[in-house]
Amino acid sequence: MTRIRKAGEGTRLILEVRKYISRLPEKIWFRAMLFSLAAIFAATAAEWIGPLVPYKSDLELASGSVGGILKILASSMLAVIAFSVSIMVSAYGSATSTATPRTIALMLADDRSQNALSTFLGTFLFSIVGIIGLSAGFYDNRGRIILFFATIAVIVLITGTLINWIQQLSTFGRMNDLIERVEKATSKALRWHGQHPFLNAQPPVDIPEDAISLQCDISSGVVTSIDLEALEETAEEHGVTVYLAIHPGKLVYPARPLLYIKGQKAIEVDPQPFRDAILIEHDRSFDQDPRFGLVVLSEIASRALSPAVNDPGTAISVLDSGLRCFEALAQASAEPEDPKFERVHGPEIELSDLFTDFFTKIARDGAAMVEVQQRIQLCLLALAKSWPELFSATASEASRNALARAEEVLVHEPDIADLKARSQKVVDSCEE
Image 1 (cartoon, rainbow, N blue to C red):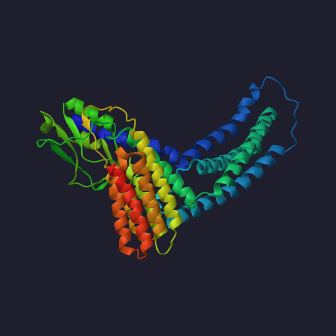
Image 2 (tube, rainbow, N blue to C red):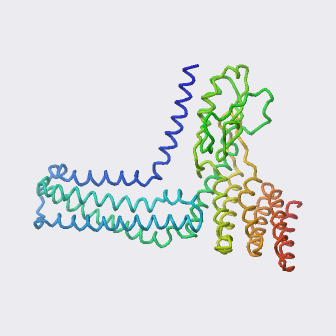
Image 3 (spheres, one colour):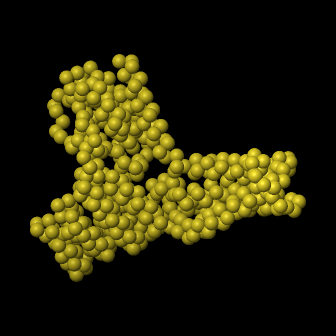
């Protein structure tokens, strides 16, 4: 029993380490550290590479020429770094106030802003190390020549980075940029869900009455990752079948079952290894949680539809993004992959939940705006017509609900008649 508990603790540790490593590229400090180490190595390696040059260069450098260039780079990069950080902090604050705080994680993981800041910091450290080496007499003539050409290469690099960064600043943190980021993350999660509808496990079935439930053993939190491979190995070891009761994004608490196990010796099995295969954190993430992205998109639309903002155009843009996300789900669902795990029955995410996460909130907050209601009906019709077997029933229900909300607040009869006609088209597509 002790050996099994230790193995379970190791499983949770491995899952946490994998999650941490997978998120490292999203951290600004990680990429900045790699660029900085590469810059320091480039500056110090000039002296080591010098003796390996097979010829004697005729190039002569004026006294202090390399040092002067490095000083200019160091001072200018310090100013650029301070400016870039202030711009990024301002963009984060703008995204929080105009869209939703849930978009900050995607902005922090932006490749172009991380590359820009890391390049500027690496160039600054390259210049500082080069200046120190020149002042200490670390470089001979060949080393100074190599350092000179390395400096030219760095200048070319930062020139391209600056051009890219200036172009990035024109859209970074703007509303269209935020919507596009959330759409991309949501489409990715929905596409994976479409290809692996039950987390790559067996389809859900009715849980046997004699199955043993395993509750959460820690404080409440949100499921962010499930290690299906670890569950499969543990189930195989003990000869049991696992029935997952939750999926990534679900709120769990000590009284809520995480999963059920069934087998001849299920009552004798240590439950900890099964619990440890489920990672519970404080905040949801976009990775394995297809519903979270739809929630964030609907939050952006709700903020835009608030009386203080009154921007139905943004809500319409969000609806168009949501339509493309559901299209990605439908395309991936057309060719699902075969289940990989035999002893685990995965959870099912209902289409009605996905539609509720997205369309219901926008229909509620935009009930009084006919242009928003019209776009909702149009998106639902597009889904019902394009993939009737998948979306028609759910889209029809969502259409009726949106129409009911609009009828409660709209007073202009032609607007109501138009929405009824649009909704009827969605309903009729379900009956075809």
